[in-house]
Image 1 (cartoon, one colour):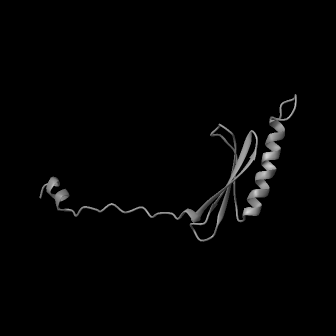
Image 2 (cartoon, rainbow, N blue to C red; image 1 turned 90 degrees about the vertical axis):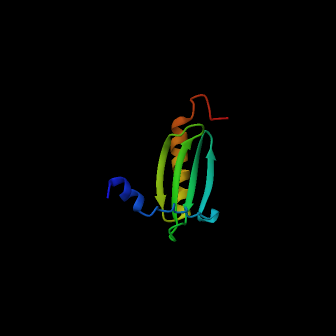
Image 3 (cartoon, rainbow, N blue to C red; image 1 turned 135 degrees about the vertical axis):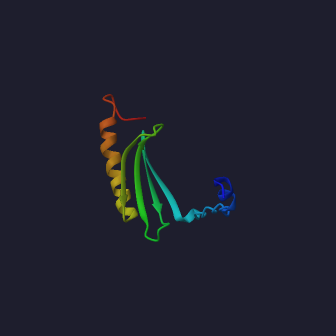
Length: 98
């Protein structure tokens, strides 16, 4: 049997359908403190929710802070803390952001 005929003899694999994730399995909450925002993403696909917190500057893809938490309250509290800390460093000397 030649290599070509071996390949032809193998059964073709059927493409596996991707499992659809229900919209309720991943929830997002956004907290804005211009020019920053924090997004809390609740991932409930594994059965035990994991809350991701991501802080970014508006218009930028750079991540200023990223963390994972066991509860929404912990994620929200850290998001508020980091938004305040980073915003204090970004405030222009002539006054707060508009």
